[in-house]
Image 1 (cartoon, rainbow, N blue to C red):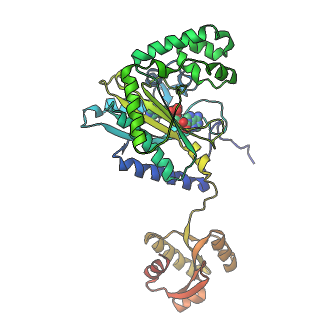
Image 2: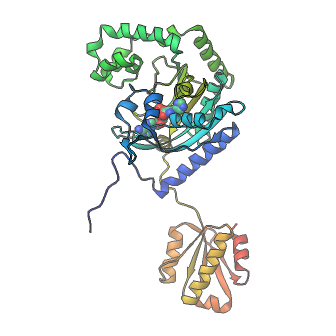
Image 3: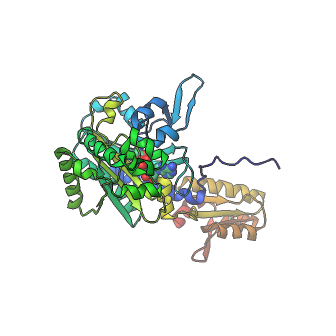
Length: 418
Ligand code: HAM
């Protein structure tokens, strides 16, 4: 045999026994998005590299270390999307969706690419489902966005989640916080990891997101952004929390929550799960009131989030699902096989899920196959049945059986099985 080619590091095959759960997640999300009048958008999987450099921020780990960037045959630098927001913002601007009436609510689903060190819950190709609300700065939109994500998780039966919330302020008050942070890091800079030492220069808030234990310990005493928020940002957060309180949603204010992308203003939030291990963030998002303008559109406030589908699948533990099968068609002899083929085709058209025998082997082997596939019904058509102008239908769960005339068999069997 030839040497096998393996799948690329950090990617995963999603096999049939897991795909059913993926379909359930996607279908549940689509229903819940529909209930809040949120429409689906589909954008390209690659975009001009500049979009991410501008949108996500040059100093972020994503842009500086993790992008799949290449020069295409037309000498353009393009990048496989590391996240969905920047592409949706680009589409929102390019398609002049800002001219449409009212806030625009958009959702998306699909693969994202980040060159990260693979581990449980962290891949190089992973899938996100996300939503973005454009055109309102109301804290009610932040609350609605958070609730939509929680509604999806609840509908899927996920338990034990915690919502963490912080505000990163607006460009005005964040400047004061940066100063306070830099002053705090000043005397301890040498004690931080080398990445954090350069973060202090480029983007001091990112130091708070460092996962290195020594940095985490040092960050314990860092000043809290909550203390430097301006009146407007404080009020915005207060109202968001009041909306969440009004529907009884619990959350934890986490003043150290900063997120890994630079576009956020005011609200940031994460939904974390105790059952995920070290990569415990299931969903992350926040408000980004300046991104549309920074990407060349008119000033448009916005808020959104996305969750990692692989992480949700890990929580739900969805392997081992077998595709349900209504009917297995077994046949013996050439003429019977042809008639059985015709019946199976007709029954599929009438809406049943039907599998047939491909082996042409003995009848008891075919019956074993039907049982192995967990078929609800078994249809047997041998030469004797064919000669009598009927087939045998067995209900495998109730262990009952009866003859069905071949004339009108499709309608009769479809009626019995349904
Ligand atoms: P993010 O926090 O970078 O935010 O990613 C959101 C979610 O995607 C994470 O919470 C995680 O579940 C999943 N995820 C991220 N990286 C990986 C990975 N390497 N492997 C597996 N899962 C991963 C964003 O992407 C923002 N665009 C969210 C947003 C939308 N903010 C505003 N609107």
